[in-house]
Image (cartoon, rainbow, N blue to C red; front, side, top):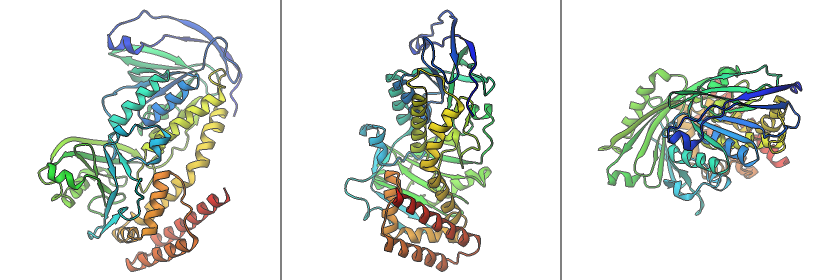
Length: 469
């Protein structure tokens, strides 16, 4: 669906530069007329992109765009806050995104997963290699670093609230006009394209009619523990499953620099989220006894990708696109990865910001590449969540399976390095038999068993695809 080649005059009022924002200066409005033709060379200027949302997705997109020669504006309404998040990232993200080690609060080398009956399995103590760990960090620290790096690569950072977006005909090359406020002053900015990275309640997604999707809610308390209690969580993270802590997900205790994050999530019973938070607090009451709540956080979490993620010259990334995995609830890596892939795709399609881009370009260079790389991962984890998180008997089977060292090794290889672990054929056969055995012992029947068969088939097909590659 290539855009029509239409010539237009592009009028815009430049936004405040960062220094002027900080000093509360009010520069005189200026008007500049420039011409752009869809999918054709731009005369006398660079492609102009607005990235709305300054989390990992938006900052990574802005960095890729600015470094690639695109004139880039990064909007964030509240830089001092961050989305509630467990804060775990895969080990590969440190090198892939050049994350400085001093940003990492904890090097988790031990995990415990606790069943509804309090069956506890140590996860990783025997299977993690000497150099491996799960990095734990705070989102406000990571987000600030990524935004600063985007700025250092040339992105213009705007602390402002986007209030409206004027959208041209989707086959037109006319500009998108972003209306926003800075220090209660109204501003407008005209751009050639928009990257929506503004979270689960994305304004950009609504404007392009991206379609509805199911959202979960995550609730988390940050709790400052006495030193002797905090020592227990020095390099340990805990996951709890059971109807008392969530009807369709898990609860967690994750260590931070000087506190722990205690939280839970649910999609099917969002109104009862505080009930489930009380449930996880009850399960860990002795471990957090004497602790003091220093912050309470809640935020919607997407449950699946949106029906439409590209329309016209607008692309969605991160939570705005719905890139949070089922089963694990992981979003940080996929947010940053989608932002970078989208930014690099725009740079490639625009030949370094020299040409206009179209919807067809965004679909081909960004969306198709993303789906080819990750769609099977999202589908497989969706099936696993349906199998193991639907009832307490399924959760008991999950925890029992997690005691198997082969399961742990495959899990860590897939999670830490974001690739399908190759594994061993005979161990795979034993894993399948053990899985059915666990389900039979836990008396899992009906739809859960059918979902299990489907998930194992999907796992087998995904493994074959890796072997063919």
